[in-house]
Image (cartoon, rainbow, N blue to C red):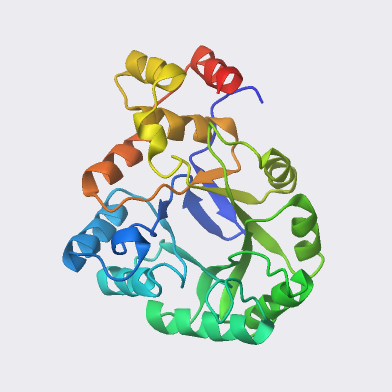
Length: 280
């Protein structure tokens, strides 16, 4: 795709305008993303800084902690700013590694509502397809919750184009969340489908769990030309790659949050973009 000037917002489901750089709230939890953080007040301070920086999409899940991330978000930010969109996920927690049975998804959604202190979740996402449950049944459960007013919009995560088509045969899907970065592009076909049909494509692990921040080579070359970090270049590439992409980098440190947020203002040249597109 030829790079160009892209809008800095995207509209989910026709009525939720979010900036195209969100925040992933996995790493505000404890070591190994399990349990509470060592310093809960620092985590809450970071979440408040997210909002101060103008980021108005926070992505979380009941499995983060588990439950810790959602609780911290509510503690730090409730009552929420009018424009803040909280996207959470269900379908991993349960007696099995994946548990997207309809009855379990209902339990997960209702528990997330309580933890987040919400009457309705803006974007509720199936965390991953359950190999033991027809995808149509899992998405159908979310559609039922939507009809009851507990979910505003439905998203899906960790899916193929076939999964996306099956989900859309059951309910309106506004977003897909798949792993994608400048160095890991296995989801190109799903991204193409999202671009074609006006869905948001939330890229998780856009910095490869932090590994891109220290990467040399072309990333470092471009970063050096702009006086930026490799992490900022990786985020800027995603923002320029497609107007459908919404990177959701996460961190537990305010300095990294501020560095990531500044990437939204980094303007790659066509030569920068092509170098990264062709070499990485």
